[in-house]
Amino acid sequence: MARLNSKLEAEGAEFLVLGHLLIEGIVAHKTYTRMPGYDLIAINPDRNSSARAQVKSRYATDFDGGFLIKRFECDFVVFVALNRGYRYARLGQDGGKKPPEFYLFPVETVKSALYEKSKWGKAFLRAIPEVDYFKNKWTIIRKFLNSPPNDGLCQA
Image (cartoon, rainbow, N blue to C red; front, side):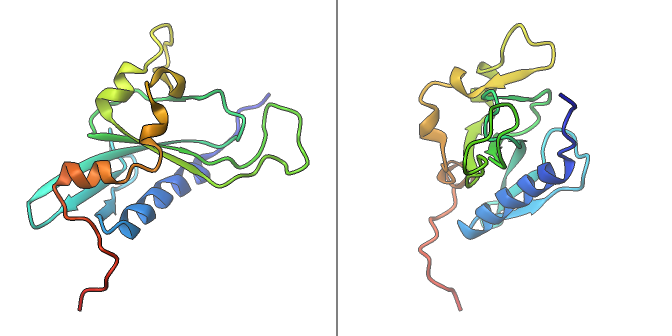
């Protein structure tokens, strides 16, 4: 099977994560493209702290549970399962499209999940203990930044 050109979708995953951080009340910015090691930076200007996040994504709903990662110059790895349809399995009635899933990992957690036989630097979700704990765990970045929780009220 030919390699899927998913550059546009990968860029979209970065914007999805950026949007979620902003919705959570975490100040965040997208870095310039080709910034080695991280894609987004979240900040707490009141405490002069920052968190660098690298976004990794997989297009297919039926991906193998792994993602490639070579650089670790970040504080967090945000993995986004885009779930845009089946690529490897037989198509179902729904085509496999589902809402995206987000996992927010401290970088050390991802390092420990690297498959040692992979020359490409592949990490697997199944190698991360209690992986569901990290699903939609936006508070992990807030705690790192020592930011107060967003109470959902508009500030005038």
